[in-house]
Amino acid sequence: MEKDYLIYKLSETIKTTTRIDKELFTTFNVKRGLRNEDHSGVLVGLTKVGDVVGYEKLPEGGTKAVPGKLYYRGIDVEDLVHGFQSENRLGFEETAFLLLSGYQPDAEELLTFSKILNDAMALDKKATINIIDLEGVDIMNILARSVLEMYTFDPNADDISRDNLIRQSIDLIAKFPTIVAYAYNILRHSQYGRVLHIRHPKEEVSLAENFLYMMKGSNEYTELDVKILDLLLILHADHGGGNNSTFTVRVISSTQTDTYSAIAAGIGSLKGPLHGGANIKVTQMFEHLKTAIKDWTNVKEIDAYLRKMLNKEAYNKSGLIYGVGHAVYTVSDPRALLLKEMARALAEEKGLQKEFTFLELLDERAVNAFMVFKGDGINKQVCTNVDFYSGFVYQAIGLPTEVFTPLFAMARITGWTAHRIEELNFASKRIIRPAYKNVGERQSFTPLKQR
Image (tube, one colour):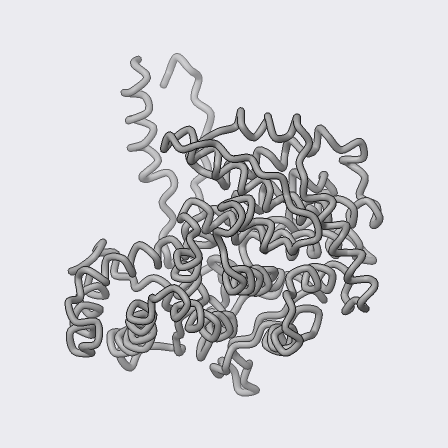
């Protein structure tokens, strides 16, 4: 039997052997996607790291939509960001400290922690050569493979003591920007024939500025570029224990495997277009709408085209408006509101006021179009999420789409490592092992000659 025919036969057979009727999920009370009927998440764990609030449970049952809130170690992220801004300083390093430790550092602790991160950013020659050898078209895959290779350089790779977990966490947070920047520059060289730049991290500058420097070189970014990238890193640093990639890290960590295996799995999860890759979808959609809609101020024209998109008559005919809606946030996404504040100033600096005004109008009309399209049957409010603005910001500061999702990973590594440390330090550790109901038919074994 030829290989292609066998693959075809297997593919056709799988159509029936893997089909499970939707009604069976209701029959057996199975929570698809670990979601309840009211779309809230199934409670599967406890955490003190982060909290995501988008609705309130009502005493009589059901939920009530509320303005979104995100908390890091009990601190409202809005207060955290506005606190940094009022003191006119960057905040990602402090956010990382807060998530890992559970408390806000004093000035001396923050200075020491920032220096430790800065000192750990550089890759040794062998690691750099390995990244060059790992050249490919997807930086997320290179990042995952590089993390797995870090295991071979760590003399205590399998040690899950608290001290060692902290050491590994700091090392990963520090090295992610360097790996991503090097991987992109190698991609730029191998795929686009550009000059290869390998820039060593600067001393005594922030992680956000070092990333821009390693990506673009000196004098190729502004102070506002650094500030808004630092903000994005803060906003993406954690999102509770239930988001797909963090839950993946917690599931893997519950087996007590090594840090690098757990983090590589998280990277694989984040790579998915339904998770970390969503900002690219928004960027591509925005570029299309800038051409498809002739008058960027005409509400009727915008509404008409968005209706076509929802009816699967325009754009990619998916029926989706990317960047609208969130699994938890309903009235508002606090990350989107914080990013929008600074994105307006960035648009003015870059001469992109018209594009930003158009994006803001799309924000308003897309939510309205979705609510009208769903009609009275809609069971929750929707809002635009952080992805609606993050792609615009990345493009405005001159970052290529190839690093959009890796930038998400650069931030979320802080949350991943904090949740891993928590998972491995529960008073009563237990491997995560949910149940699946088998609804297939029993079969009898048939001798090979009789098949």
